[in-house]
Image 1 (tube, rainbow, N blue to C red):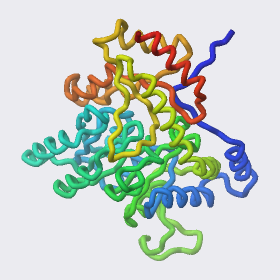
Image 2 (cartoon, rainbow, N blue to C red):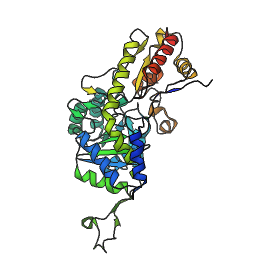
Image 3 (cartoon, rainbow, N blue to C red):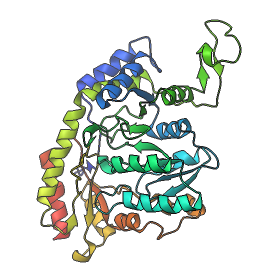
Image 4 (cartoon, one colour):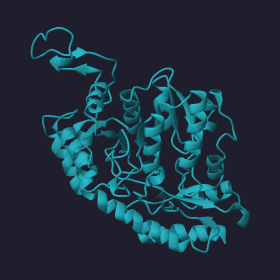
Length: 389
């Protein structure tokens, strides 16, 4: 008999989602069209941002955001080592140099105290970053108020990597409002809070950034006569005025995303319910459950535990394999970016960011998604208790 597998995350697709996609398939538009605009407007209104630009992935969103912020050769940008490689690769695509700020022990987000210390040192050396990309790990916001204060003092732009965080809040602001940043980026990958299959979005409150993002998304082309060199030749005419990309989202994807938006808050509430059940069940186990800042309402994209390795009889790897062998498809978020071979070739070394490295040695991402049943969750809990007690 085939063992039933419980993934660490998965999409939730309803009949309404399917019907929304079918309607687009029967329409006149399949590529970027009116449904993309509706999806952008829905996200912007939900978040309280002025503008939203839908693109093909969160990676392309990060790339375009870096370009729109003016990042280029000779510039420096900083991000967290506890993230997927895209958060760092995006600035390298622009020819800039990357560095990292280690994580906070409690939230696993970029540590603002270490950020300030690093900024003081960088200012004395004349090597301040042009851009900082704080990553809202697992859906919990970074300490954005302090990051915004530091950006004003030291003159860097801020792009929130909110790939995990749509549906979350920071203090009185919806994540994505860009109240405390220049831009924010969402991901719509299937394991994220809502999905478009693949896809991403950049939000901003600044008109000039929005216009640049729109151009860069589609080859650097404009049809605006005011931006052209010379006279327009007619209504068919366009000019490429900068080097852009084909990072467009399709109406097919946007239809799914627009439909999913109807259940966004429901998804996040369910994630919180499941997270609380885990935390209650694990209170007597030798592990650390996710700490939640009172300033943040997490989207709870991930539920990451930390094993207290000095209190258990098995290793991190053995625990991981034990769950996999029993159909619980755990994952690990994240391998610290600076330890990847490519980044080692850039000069980074083990020991550079000890909190991220220590976290990696203890972390396990266990299943959490809205369609998860309590019976499935109870199975995960039972297997984990057997492994750890």
